[in-house]
Image (cartoon, rainbow, N blue to C red):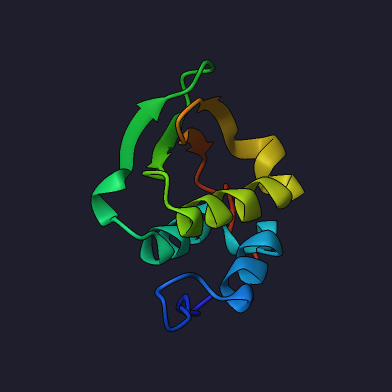
Length: 112
């Protein structure tokens, strides 16, 4: 998807941006979703991405999101968690204080 996140006059992600995250289809790839989320995040340095191996020794991207207590970022996380397919495939852990870790695999094939 070649969409850019949008924001209201106070800098919060719009309902349209949150709906895009909630409804992001699996076929569009979750690496692209996390790129979109990173562009919507309030503080870029509160999003970390590392290449790691999962429990099966497959290459995955580990994304750590820290909300910083900002409700706009928390709304983005809520939207991610409402995307059921993303949640079931990618959520790894959550920590009190607004730290979330997701593991995203590169799709084996491109979907149209």
